[in-house]
Length: 379
Image (cartoon, rainbow, N blue to C red; front, side, top):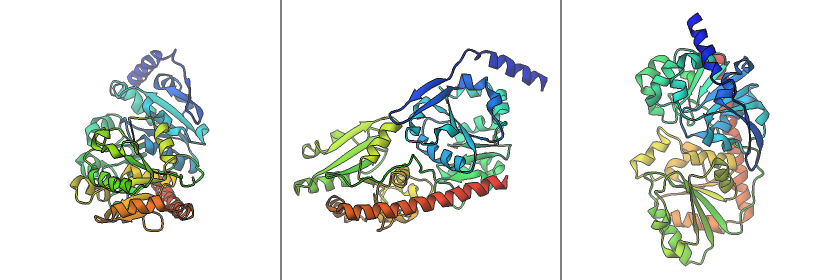
């Protein structure tokens, strides 16, 4: 123990001159603490703090939602994330309850396991926001698998069957965004408090550009609709350039707006200013079928959080609790008609979809809140 304490003191001396920085998004002003500064202020961690640790450079759309649940349960929250995730809090209205700690890469943890294990153990609870087998040694060396106060979020539920997780975790430590039998559902879909927006005069659709998706049926549908002189706009945002302007015809080039690798604040702005989210999951594609069996699409989170009615295939709708009262449901034969219905929809009917979607959002929030509360009580 003495040797470990000496190593910790030497480790902290390296960072004594580091300072916190101020950070401002378009929406909110708050402090961000570089991990070097955070490491020398460990005495500010008390028993009322919960740590959210995101080891990967993605899934930051989940961080505000998880933070909101923990704050509503009466805790303060420390979030360790990479800098790219900061703007996910741009609409978060309880920023005084969180501290955002940024790091550049995982090497700082891997080179100082003893210290970070000591540090993490000071928290009331720990939530690992993304759990994947490829970082199993990180979890082991930080002693996260051997203490009962750690919760692991599985975005790919099959990973639960990995031997190390299966042998070390109790069910109440296994969280997921969907309703799967091998985990506890906690769905983080809070981004901020938004006033439901009226339908735009020119109907605007939002869609993500993802790997291995079928966009042909979508392009064909909009080509037909364009020939009918309908007005519409489609915003395509994503990390992957798999869906791009090279795939659309000249007649659609003024209708599609493509943006890639945008900040979370820009993503949220585009979602808020849209009318509908197209969740283009195809039941004929094996990879897409995973999204109602072992995975959850992030587009559903955006729909719940921003109250944007989705257009979704009937084979996937039930899994996400989407129905004809809160969404536009289509099948293999009527996608074009579904788009036309969205374009022609009057604001009164649109507001009705939004209202019912808000009821669903609150229902999922309530269920997730009590699920998480019960998990904490188990400890």
